[in-house]
Length: 72
Image 1 (tube, one colour):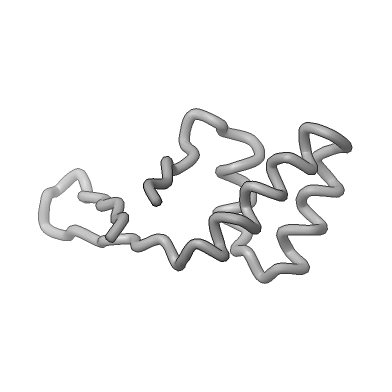
Image 2: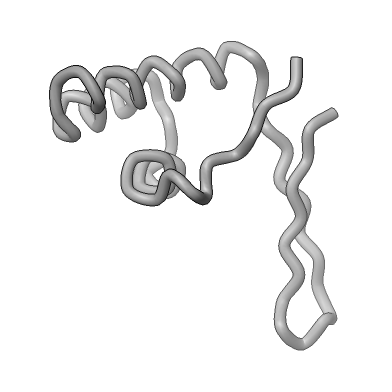
């Protein structure tokens, strides 16, 4: 299963983040494509309508280098 981990600076806590599912991947990919073809606001509105979290929306639309890679 695809998983990302975050360790705090003090090293005392580790939080694992699992990607929800392939459907979520498709939604985010479509949002990114919509941003490229139309504009960022259209992509934001679409992703919000699909219940994608604001933190994910911000990350995938404004910081392409921080997008998660998917393995199918």
